[in-house]
Image 1 (spheres, rainbow, N blue to C red):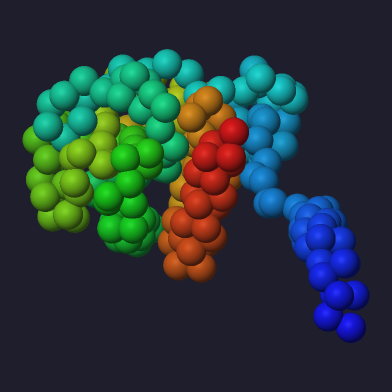
Image 2: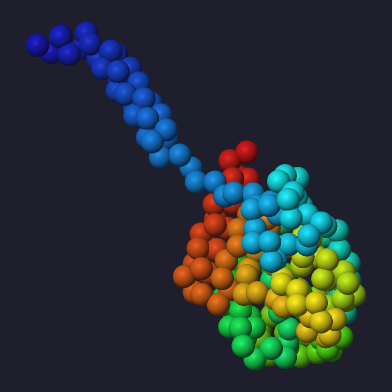
Length: 225
């Protein structure tokens, strides 16, 4: 009996290894890794998209930009090169959804504070009111870490075009006043290629949890390349 087992020992080992490989392949087929969509203007609520790109179905990327952060530093796309980041639009004097959004963005900041791949970017929609000094005061009040999270102001036209033509995140009521950019509660997840990979309700903690999970998925997609 012992000689029988010795005779087929190699066969048993090979069979076991092959079985493990086959089971692993079947499992990966039945349980594929989750990937995030790449959002194009044609897939987003038309209210949020400039009419010039509403029907664009591919090749959408966040445009180049040059804005000023809470410390008076010029922030461009180069500061976010090879980074995954979360973007939103707000204003410091908002008393409705903005305080909730900022609080929840702060929660995201806490989760990604030690991760060099992830950053945050908040654009004011009232740049004439939200000066550098005003943003600095706001940042201090809200616990903003400038190494991870830029609050930016600048040319209103540029911010408006970024909102409508790049991030697809702001409504327009067309009155031409200081509050004519009606921002939403959306947080946008942007990948290293400057593509939109997700929209999240920045006032909803469950959505914040989903955002954090999607950040992990997006990070994993780069690590597996």
